[in-house]
Image (cartoon, rainbow, N blue to C red):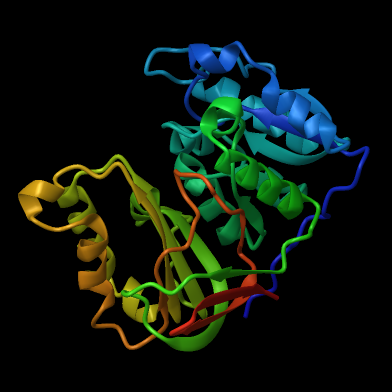
Length: 308
């Protein structure tokens, strides 16, 4: 297995940067500092990207160059120990295109986000750096429901190095077995979008693939799953974890639920497959250390994901 860099976990008194890596903030998000107060309640200092509140045509948080400059500035800032993307949306790949990506390797720090931020996770995995797939400021708050608190606490524990494992309930589609590998993946549509790029993950080392998605039509999901199947990704993976598939449309036309569709691709596999893992675009959204070696144990009693 390739040796990965694990950034230093946070401690009270450390500084985190909140930056906009892709889409601009919504009007509602501009009117609250709940997320800033939450981070400060953990004993952290918070720095804001200069262009955090910018907007540009295409619903971007400023220009590609401005978003890239904010990230570069925080990577170069010795006080900053972690970068948290305010939201996903769209634009991460454009931001990466505008960056000197060597800065991530020269100044490795925790990077936090999910959804469109999967592009940054893929980039960091190509550089051999761990990152955190977890809740973002745009997805938490008093209006997000009681389970939002669970997502917040999971991120808190992840940043401070307190997550060791997760146990899940049984699921009728899960496939039993034990395996070990590096946890990779994230949002399905972004993982597929990275195919053919310099940060494509070829799963050429023992890997456990995690996927989730939101607001997709059934035919889009089928096409993406088919792409990964025909590309050999499911076959090369040592195990697969199925996260949340939220707000899927077209189930009536397809006369099946979204997880029935996903299971069509998982059922023929002779390897552990864990369904029902609470990570993605719903709460609770449990944080994951991507790039970390893990063990996956799936039984009739549920699943155990353990970080090494």
